[in-house]
Image (cartoon, rainbow, N blue to C red; front, side):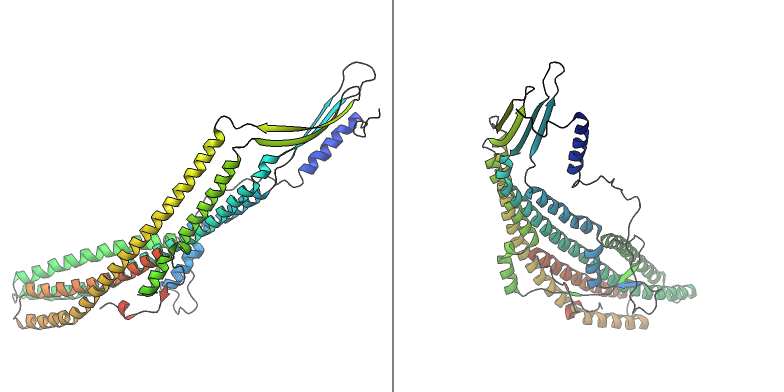
Length: 456
């Protein structure tokens, strides 16, 4: 019987065949490159706009610019965006067919006459992996959708967090302006009072009242400046800027909100458009695909292969082999239980988020009504308080009003001005919160409205 061509290869050529085979397997292989970790901060720069006349002035950061910078340069969003590449690689891995297995053996006789080397060649394929390929691919596709939607939701929540800090800065600057103006007037009065006290024109109680009021105003200004520094640092971090980057806010802004009827419609269809709920829905689909794959793993795993061999007397044989993996120790059943429990947990979480969203929308809507009513009442009282403070000043200068009573009137006016600023801040923060709950991801900023006019 003639030996096959493979058997007639001389021994020195086997190394060459192995080399060619190994080289062919390496054609599609990726090479290793070490990952270089960063050692220094990688901050972005805040370039002044071209229309800015004096570059030495502090950069004015508008609300719209804040949102754009957060989306573009936020470090957490940059890292989350790279997750899409991981999800795409998972799809490629799940869609690939199982690699066949190839076995080659050669036994060379050490003694005997007329004997040849025994050869055995076999190729096999895991058929059970092919059976679950569809489920694995569906799970990977759902994971990619989930990753994309999670990124969208993270972008929205990060924008709203930065917007909330921004409006705090706007309100902080407005309150600081009111307190600084009041402090300047008190200090001017205090200098006059001290000069008058030295000449004996007034009594000590008037000077003491001014000193106490000036100290209280200074304390409030210091607290606001400390809070402004902390908020500024947080916003720099959210925009990927260095901690010492200087800028100032543009001022009050309004937030676009649909009317009450539109809000009700959006809430009714929240599960169909809010990014985190859609991501959770994709997670449920992924868990469902994994559950179906786990069900298939309850059946015996099947491998199939064909082989060809010859012994040392050159007797040729050909055949096939079938292998079974017997799921008898409960591993497959445990996988089914895990996948089923995961799917049920995600479904319960989905329902819980819808319930929470409905409660939050109702709470914020009621809060907005209360804040707007409060602001209207404050704005109605302010002109009267301003006139009262002016009359008190005239009466004090004429000697008909005590210093303590005058300072009490001024303190009431200042407190009401601060209350108006804080209420405006609360309205905008509630509007931002409502947009977040409703999952509205389009442009947030609109031109200034009468509600958010400049502080008194």
